[in-house]
Length: 255
Ligand SMILES: NC(=O)c1ccc[n+]([C@@H]2O[C@H](COP(=O)([O-])OP(=O)(O)OC[C@H]3O[C@@H](n4cnc5c(N)ncnc54)[C@H](OP(=O)(O)O)[C@@H]3O)[C@@H](O)[C@H]2O)c1
Image (cartoon, helix red, strand yellow):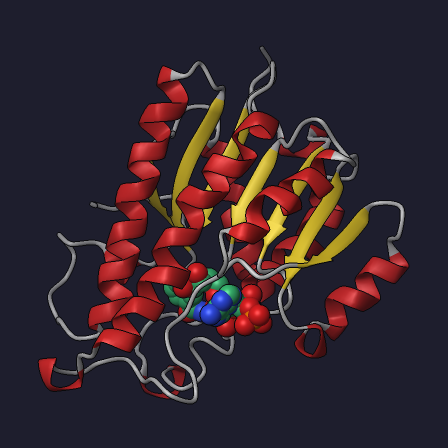
């Protein structure tokens, strides 16, 4: 079995590629994985213009799929569409995430905590990843080393939590991390050569962070820098780091 080698992979699936970090991952992979076919999902076409333009420009390598991860009914048929194109996925990255929308802002206090926002946080940030692992397992398991990664967040680290607040986002990312640890153990038990990584991307200028970046003292990254950092972590850790939580700079984070 060959070790994971990003420049040599043949196929990759990016979930949540319509904009933000997911879109930058697609752009970066077009360059860093020159032999790979890239399959990319987006939800809202009106917010995915750049992805559409790339798909036209790189029509032999990049194929896009409008796909909504919020219903389990959509997973099997989506996996079948990818399977019609490739028998093997070498790298799957889930880049979707929810922090705020027109209805919900991150909860500062228990006074803000409510069922609808908590359910939305867990549905988008936690539940999608184990469903992807379930429905794409057979494409990830093959005779080469593959990698299943999900973009998590440092604020989901229970040990690192010194400030509190952001109840739904923090807890749903902590749950995501537990799902990823579990998936890594099951993949190993089922003789699946797929490493499972949880990756904190660093504070990145996207729609998700936009309301908060003016006040942050944290280092700010452009999405293209973040994509480079994430792919560096994957390239370095996919062979040996399964079941671990990594920061954008390659440091291991506490769960
Ligand atoms: N930006 C940061 O500073 C930062 C820091 C730590 C972690 N992260 C994580 O990085 C990942 C990427 O986020 P980003 O910064 O690139 O933000 P973004 O540009 O807002 O992208 C978020 C992605 O999640 C999808 N999404 C949001 N709500 C959804 C829902 N209800 N159902 C299905 N899909 C939904 C979006 O698709 P639509 O276009 O269809 O809504 C989009 O693909 C997320 O997991 C986020 O938690 C980001």
